Image (tube, rainbow, N blue to C red):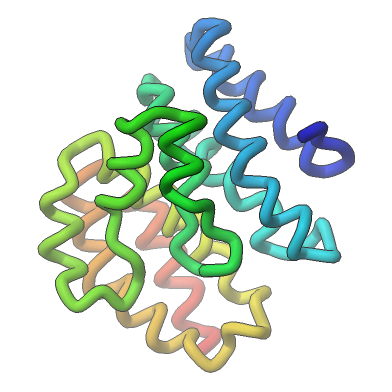
Length: 192
């Protein structure tokens, strides 16, 4: 799929950030493939390329590149293809496995979705690398929740879950991501 406009600009930003972070050409190519795959359902389903979910795959990977650094390309790819908010934008795991390999597909299925009855338990069991992918992907959705009028009825629930599960988890995993979750929580609570 040829990415144009805002999605193409994000693809170039993602590649540049990965190169600055020390990624080799093959790794940049893998990340570009993951991002492109994640964009397919977005281009098809979202009429507005300014919809908050549109560039989510790229932003999730950029959080890891800019705030964490040195993250393996498989983890960056998982962050790009994981979709915790909009079921219609999720990629079939079989397609992810065929295109990006079993490691990415397995990582994708290991990350719990919001509302999971065993959310905290499953988050803690992820391991360091998958923890980063899960935190970055969820953080990006939370950062854009305030512009999702279609989700306004669930803002309080999302906030409560973030404060009770995601923020403490981030505090265990990565200092910068924990600060970003804390900052989001302080600002978002004023909206609900």
